[in-house]
Amino acid sequence: MAVGAAVAAAVTGAVWAHYSSSSASGQPLAASAASRHGAKSGAGTPAPAAAAPAPHTYPLQAPLVAPASRAFPSEGQWRVLATDSRGEPVVQGTLLHAAGTSAPVAIAWIKESAARFELHPGYAQPGGSWSQPDMLPRGRRDGLIATWNGGFLMGDSQGGFYLDGKQYGPLVPGVAAEVFRRDGSFTVGVWGRDVKLDSDVVGVRQQRQLMIDGGRIAGDIDSLFTWGVTDGGATYVRRSGVGVTADGDVVFALGPTMSPRSLATALQQAGAVRAMELDINISWPSFMAYDASANPGDPRPFKWGDYPRPAERYFSHSARDFVAVYARATGAQGGCVDASGAPRSRPGGDTLVAPLAC
Image (cartoon, rainbow, N blue to C red; front, side):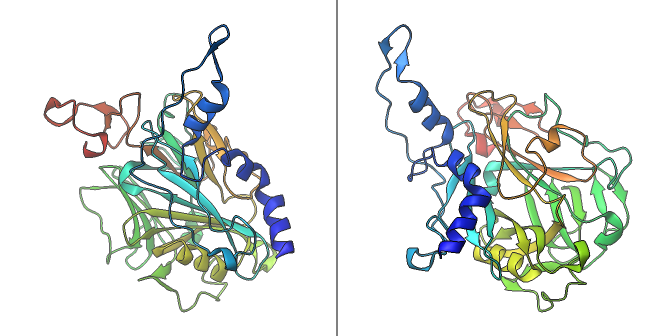
């Protein structure tokens, strides 16, 4: 246990320290920061007493590891990674001990119904001209709460890429797919079985096969050929994957030294009933959460997990495709957006309609 604790602290200490400002009850970072920096108001005037935080609609997830079974003290305990404009912790994170290695795997959970998901192309993969940019420039960051990496090189993915009516390669039946719908919703499934191309689908990123299907890990999970060519033929490399829970929420996993089985086991432990591997090897996997407390229009990114790329990587042109996640409740009073992120009026002009009902 001492080794696991030391590795966990070394790999993720800075990130964990940043998010430890959240209280055990799930108080969002913005509220915690306000309480830390608001001891004085004006020229020596004491700040008013902070009101007790309202109960969250989405409380912190239940711990994934019982205290007696933890490899390091905080294993399996959730922290707030990003909140929406109402302070709801719609992105949460935890660390797990990865099977077969002492290095921890970073897990993120996203409340799917409270978020809007966008697929972005890379300038090299798939390449070409698309409706979405290959980066997130200023003006496209309001409400941004998370980003994660795409998949293999398209030639190795065994599937295709589709975005707003344009396609690169065929969308192959039986291949695993990230699917993005016009209303901003997201899922993972088998193309032709769980999902298909219809008028509601605006984005598809296919890759190989599901690692987890029906809550079960794939029978050939130990076949390295199935799960991509690794650096130097190593079994344990940096890997990432994404899945959906039985409730439709999204879980993401990333670890620095993981086999296909250890990645699948982490996603399964996080609650995935369907999950697929994304990119692998040292340079590509990443997950960023975003803190908008200082500047809602230009939130500050933070790395969640162990990887070398900078947290700002998608603020510049990206060679490969990626996913951007926005809070549905954005702006000071919340709001409605369409699938492109453009503001729109509330149904019937009713200003009392909750943002999530838009």
